[in-house]
Image (cartoon, rainbow, N blue to C red; front, side):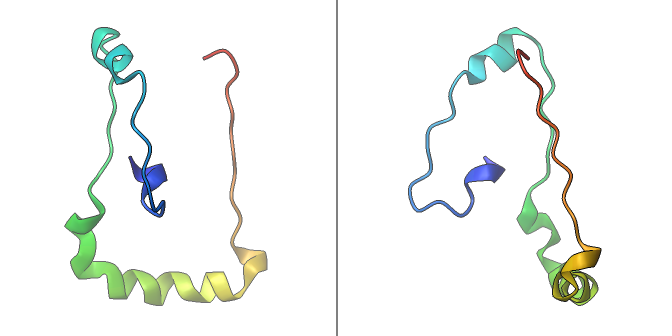
Length: 65
């Protein structure tokens, strides 16, 4: 899973069968599909990272979901 990319020892994915039996939709993309545009992405993003005030993160958490 994406959240485990930087872990030394990734954890197992739990309850994945709930996604299957619940007919849920799980969608994402493979990062390596876009490796050819990574340098262009860095050129665009690095100025924002350097100016921390311009880059922010929003977080939403659902309880009992």
